Length: 277
Image (cartoon, rainbow, N blue to C red; front, side):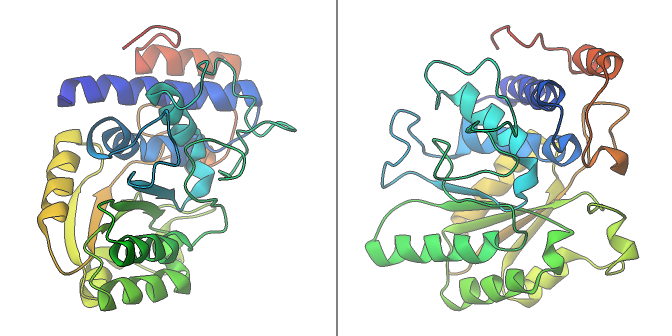
């Protein structure tokens, strides 16, 4: 798909994610908006999926390791056609809703892996990629993790396995937005470059702007052409991207817009919620 169209979809998904949090009165808008362009590029351009058959054996797999960012994933699945009829009101985090505050593979069509306990996505993704190798399946496994999440030791256990097994069908995106739930990354583990760490583990690594859809498309193409080792795409992102008062403002890691703030988000994102692309 052309990058112009993908940008329009990304804006719509951002607005849907904000609306989801606004209507549900709970959720994590900042982390969701940070990865909106990556999720859009995956679901509307890069990934081989069949919304009518969410369990198709040869589908590409996706893991949102930073599971609290799930409103953007739910919005993408909805727009891609996984839910019939299309969902109008998600009731995010509501009792008995299939759209919980962290994604559940048992409750929501299109969710390949439950997440929420941070740090597990890379290791589970390596397992999925290894399964594809063993079964001679053509699918890729994509993972999005956060830069704060990389403090979890299991991330590097998974990274080590992926290198040792030569999992060139595993592509990990790092959302490098510089924040974690309560403070900046530099205030916890210091200023260190996740790209250098993945290179040290033998991965093929690229560093790009996580809001440049053309760059995301190109990086995925390079990752797919890289053989014999897994790929990591470190993306410089802005937490809360697209809504002025949320951008780089960690108060919006978790929070609900007021009526006035929601209307401003609608104005800034510029895509009427119920209109087509």
